Length: 419
Image 1 (cartoon, rainbow, N blue to C red):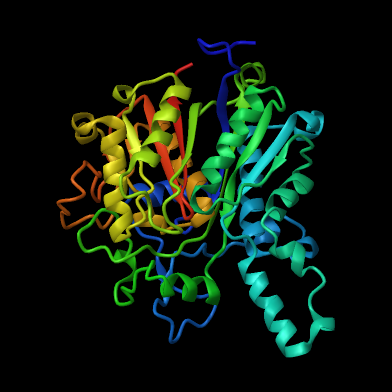
Image 2: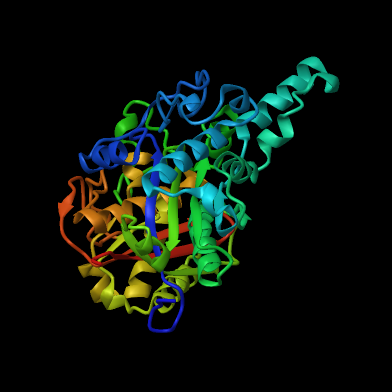
């Protein structure tokens, strides 16, 4: 097998799929992002009157029957719809023939919550109609692993089937699972990513009660403002994003388009707080260093970081500290960093895959996406956050950070593919 310097199987990206608040394809989402637009708007999935926040970053105009049979779609929660749409797109983009070798192709599909809307509906049916009238598909709509299950059943994969449920770090961890599965020889191809559909009464009310989401109801499109001094919380987002990882020689043998190489992955835990990040930054920085070591690079090699950057007062300061610890003060100030959550909102368990896709495209296209709405300098967030306008700059190494409630930290490292 062709390998890296340490003899491991090399893993490349050969397909991308996405439905996001910015568009119903990868290309539309990327173009909207680079144009500096926001996906935020009034909530349409329920009546938000009386809620502290009446806006979100929703996926708009998705017809799931473009990707799955109508009858089957009724047995799924919306988060599974988003996962399947992205998976079908990624499969098509990759040119894979899954049926030819299904046992060597697997999937890792993450989520932070799972079928939240279906859980709400089940409770409503139970309360209003009694236990004998609950939808018999309720449980399989709710449980977090069923997006992975449906992706496997619909696409026909029979290799490893995994489902991380680690809050906002989940789909970066799915990418790590895919990387490990291919390196260890358990699979040759892994469809990796995540999906989340938290725009619901419980989702908005619950996060609002934590004071985690913005209440800028008079200006939704400018509410998500990572690293800005006037940020007041994140904007709830939903998305599905899938990335095809493939062993290098296999991809080359079939003439696949290669977007980038996934070089490394690092994970750590804070052991600090249920929702607040490690105040020292040491544990997330350790995940970054682990990813650098796994990739065989040093901090000096990093050309771009797609930050977790949620637009929360505590989180953005903490991540700035993390980047400085991992890269060193001088290198941190020289490295472009952006948070694409300014445009997409926070897509929770799908965020890592969405942002990894944007990192891959940044390397492939030579364009670094902007942090929109970053207008007023925060002295505690003093790095180069690529404010408001995309930047034409070719970099070789890109990193994507994801940090989740409960102290989950996951970082991935990609290299531009040059053949």
